[in-house]
Each structure stands twice: as structure tokens, then as C-alpha cells.
Image (tube, rainbow, N blue to C red; front, side):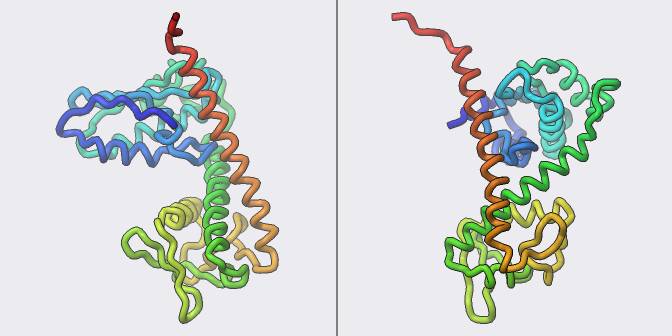
Length: 259
């Protein structure tokens, strides 16, 4: 279980709003919240200025991933009405100083690492957004299969068949049947990512399309699910490794009790 971040906030800052904003920041490679992963160590408020200290699993975590997360943390928190300035501290990375200087001055990754950075962070981010889409799609498909839906029924679904009631998702199956998914997070997360990566979001569009924008045919859905499952398991394995490395890193810093 990850440790909750240490919070030093006072009015007018609202703890719930700030944590809600941070929950939207994802590790781009893992498609998991930095809060859930335990990457936020502390948040301190100095009037309308927030100082966020992050902790990565290892000191050699890829600078581009650390940069994207730090950028996103700053961007999300600057959207809070009570916040005018955000400083992100990156703990124990081999290039912490360069990341902090770049992010906190609003520079892009290539500006911060001029002459050193060759990767296009936009392209890299897009790659992981698409992997995350497949992971979320697999979770949704798996839930529908657990509900007893056939491949044919699943592939006949359209976006317009999705509606919400409180924290429940109601899927219309044909003219007389409904499937309730509760809570609705699994559906909302999938559709949010689908829209984010620019896939067809019209009401009449097929609910399940691949990354080539094509509806998945019923006769190919079982094979597609195998592919999607490998993507999910790969991301989950990486997430478990990161969590284990972070826990080991924190354990190393704990004082040893002498008997």
C-alpha cells in the first residue's frame, strides 16, 4: 500500500480539490495515477504558492517520464483557483536539477535539455496514451464478458447505447435489455481516453474500435482480447515493479533498530 503524501495546506486551499487534480496526473508509461503509485511525497502551501515534492522509484528513472509527470503536476495544480504558483521538486533523480529548472520555468523538454534531448515528448506521450487506451478497453471488454454478453452483442454496441445514472453506467443491449456496470469508472475512463486520442466519438460510432479506428468484428474479438490482455499485463507488471522499487528505496532510508 502506498503512503499518503504529507500535506501542509491551509485555507483557502481545499485538500480534496488539490488531491483530485493530482489524481488526474498519470505516469505516462503505466497509465496509473501518481498518487496511487506513491510518487507524491509532500505538498506544502506558502500562501498561493504550492511546493510539491515527488519521489521516483529509482534515481535512474527516465528523465523524459519524470519531466512529463512534473509538467503535468504543475499544469493541473495551476488550474486550481487558489493557486497562482507551483514549484515541483524531483527527489533523487540523476538530473533532478535540470528537470526542476525546466519544468518550473515553463520550458519544454527539448528546451530544458538543449543539445541532449532527441525524443519528441509529444510522440512518446501519444504512444503511451494509446497503450493506456487498449488497457482500459480490455478492462471494459472483460467486464462485459463477465456480465455474460456474447461477442456479437458487444460488437453491436454504439456509443449512444451508453448512459449514466448516478455512479452507474447503463448499457442498452438491443431494444429490451440493459446491463448495469457499477461503479461507472471503468466506462468513463475508457471513453475519456478514446476521446483524448481522437478516435470517433459520434453517438452512432461503434463502442469498441481498434487503434486504426476500425470497429472490432465479432469473429475477431477473442483474438483481439488476447492482444489487449498482453498490453494490460505488461503495463501492470511495470507498475508493480515501480511500486516495489519505490518501497525498497524508502526501506533503505529507514533507520535500523538495534536490539
